[in-house]
Length: 113
Image 1 (cartoon, rainbow, N blue to C red):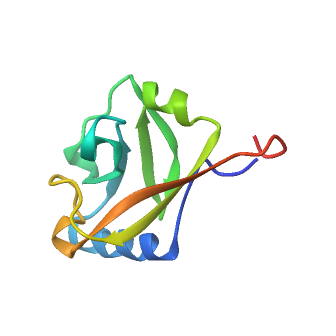
Image 2: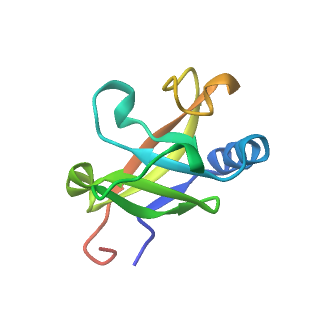
C-alpha cells in the first residue's frame, strides 16, 4: 500500500527551512474555497485540530491533516505536495518565501489502494 501523502524534494527542502525558522509544523487542507483548498502550513501549536480532521500521513516528519468531508473525495488519491513560485494563503508560513505549496494528485490503481 502506498503513502496517501508524499512531497517533492522541493517541498521537503522548504519544509525543513520553515521548521528551522518556526519549529514543529503541521499541514492542513480543508477543502474550502480559494486558498482553503490548498495545503496550509502552520506552527504545530498554532492550529487546533478537531474531530473532523483526518491524519493523511507525514511529509518531512510533519503531520498532514485533511478535513473529513474533503477526505471522502480524495481517499482514492495520493496527494503529492509540491512548491511553485507565487503567493499562497495569507496564513500559511511559506508566503514570505515567495513560493506556495500546492497539491498535485494521482488516483491509486486498484493494486495500490
